Every structure is written in C-alpha cells, then in structure tokens.
Image (tube, rainbow, N blue to C red; front, side, top):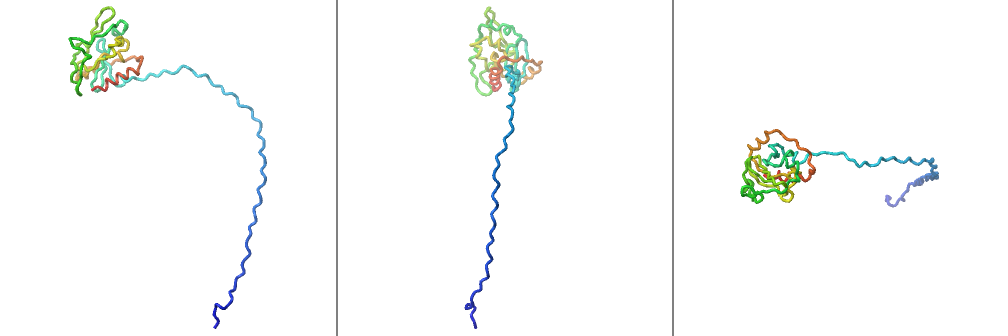
Length: 221
C-alpha cells in the first residue's frame, strides 16, 4: 500500500491581495474672507470716585455684653458673670468740663486702691465696698474735691491705672478709657442693679479702645 507521505501535497491557489485605493487629497484651503471694517468702541464714561462713605454704627463690646444702669450721677455696667464696671454718667459735672480735673487720689481711708494684691478665683485681697464707699477723690483746678462712690455692694478688684497719668479721661471718656473701677458683685446685688431702668448710651468716640478695656473687665471672674 501507498504511504500517504509519498503523495505530493496539493496546494490551493491563493487569492490575489486586495488593494484599497487611496483617499483623494483634501481640497486646498481658501484664505479667510476679510472682516468688515469695525468702528472703534465708544469710550466708557466712568463717574469719579466719591470720597464720602456711608457711616456704619456698630455696637461696642460694652453695649453687646453689658447692661447699663444709672445710679445718681454714676453708671454701672453689669456683666452676666457678676462684674460691675463703674464710670461717670455724662450728666456728671466733671463730664461737662473735663479740663478742670487736676488729679485723682486713690488713697482713701488710709488704703491705697492701686496697691491691692489679688489671689485666687475669689479675688482674695480685694476691698469690700458698699454703695456709700468712696472709690477715689477727684481734685479740680479750682481746689474742689469730688468724692466718687461705688454705688454697688461687692469687692473692689481693680481701679483704672490710666487715670493716674491722664485724669481727664474720667470726664472725657467715661464709658471707655475713663472708667473708674471694676467690682466683683454679689448675685443679689446684680439682681438689684438690673431691676433699675436701663440706660441708652451715646456712640463713643473711639470704640476700639473702649472694647479692649471692657473685654479685660469681662474676663475677670
């Protein structure tokens, strides 16, 4: 028998290769048409800047967080943490003529209010005061001595050291740098003061300086 390997291999005829025709070249680019002539834009009319700005009145730190009450010719600012900020009311005679203030004496009854040394949260070392207690004495250029009283019951923990160098602040800026003292009041005293009619304050001349002093007073507890 014949071996299959001895037979010649029959090859199938190969099909001719398919040639894809090339795409025609793109048409030549046409130059852009000239744009129509445009007229120059009209100049913008800008109004000159106005130098006048609108006045905004923002509440100060004292107005936001303190309740003000008037007792005779004095103002008492009450904070919710029991702090009393004592100052003159604008109707006080010293506020009408601040230039007449010569100097302020803090030593009353043999005790210098500027030498207090406080200790602890309860401010041990402070001076207990009553509404009739004299906080300081103001000496005027005419020789008159005006005693300023606390008008509240509590513990005197700080006096305004700025008044030693500039005593006229007590009359010119009573609600700011010219405050007299800070008193740590009792809860019953706080309720008594808040029971008085509220006092509306006039806008201060320098709110930023007044806020810094009021914030320092509010932190004392």
